[in-house]
Each structure stands twice: as structure tokens, then as C-alpha cells.
Length: 118
Length: 113
Image (cartoon, rainbow over all chains, first blue to last red; front, top):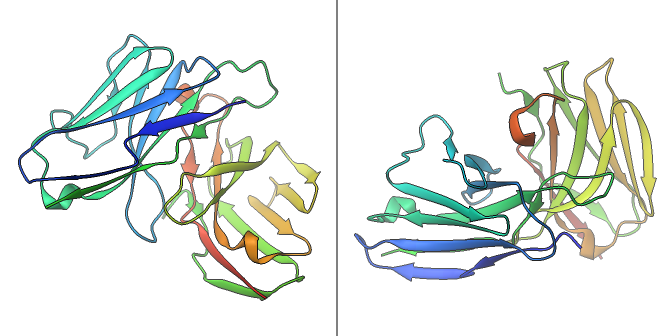
């Protein structure tokens, strides 16, 4: 149980284009989903927190108009990087938290999406 | 000063040795403590979860929390090359909105055959 998937696993795009990354909780309902960014050999940096049906809450310094987050259902959240530039190249990881009926209901992470902007 | 401090390593140990990892923190409100393992270019995987102070054991892994010292530890016994990964500590308080976690920097562990 507690499986989170991400799609795509790796995407290469041209500068100026938009890229959508999907995050799905496969076997539980995720009331809250988190989006992180991770640069090589660095820890996770939280970008935003989203609750199903609500607007996402962005961390300080994260541009909400550039990183659009939609949490339309209890099993799906999407992150759209708009007008991507080379500095947006990074490893994007989502996590999901929900009522699993277990003692632990902490965040379970997806496998990550590697974005390369040329 | 960061809320959670963790030595980034790398920490290199021979196969079969005990790996000892730790984090310190400054926020006394933290009550939930986690250890995640992350292989290169993969998402973090939850290894251990501890509430408040005490020890917890799961197979070769032992997690310890000392709230009086604001110090948590993870021990890996009989380490294997497959344990080579980055280990992240994470923690939160009881009232953190939506369960937002504070992460350490992660310690890179290398277990040599």
C-alpha cells in the first residue's frame, strides 16, 4: 500500500514551453499533496502544499504563476512549469498524505520527475 | 540557523559495520520523527517513524529519539552495499499545517564491499 506514481519520469523540453507533471496516489486517497524540488546533492525544497479542491499554498520565494498546481481529485495533483527556462531544470518530487487507516499517515513520495530545459 | 541540522557526509563504512546517523533540531514542538532513504534519482522512501521520545526497532534498523537533547539517531546494523543511499531525517510538530515536514540536508552513506 501507499504507492505514489509520477509521470513522466523524465522530460526534456525547449526553453519557453510549458511542462505538466502528474502525481497520483494509486491505492489511497490523498487529502494533501506536496511538491518538492531537489537539486543535485541537496535536500528536498518544499515548493507548495495542496489540498483537494483548494488553491495551493506556496512557500516563500516560489512563483505561483510559474508553477501552477492543481489538485482536482483525491488521487491526482498536477504541477505545470510554465514558460520553462534552463534554470528550472531540476528533479521534481511529489508526496501524498492521507487517511490510510494506518498508524502512520506521513508523506509517501513519488519516484520523481527529472526536468531538463534546453 | 536551520531548524534541522544533519551532516551531509559522505559517510563511508565497510560492509557489515554499523552505520550511525543523526540529526539535531531546535524546535521543541517537534513530536513526529521520520527517517527516509533516497537512492540516486529516486524519490525518498519512508524507513522509520517515531512519535515522541524512545527507541524503535525494525529489522536491521533502529531509530532513537531524545527530545530532551533534541537529537535523533538511526542505526543500521550489518550494513550491506545495497544500503548505500542518502538518508534524510524529517520531523514535524502536532499542529503543523497539513503535516508539513522539516527535512535535514541528508547524509550520503557508502557501504563498501
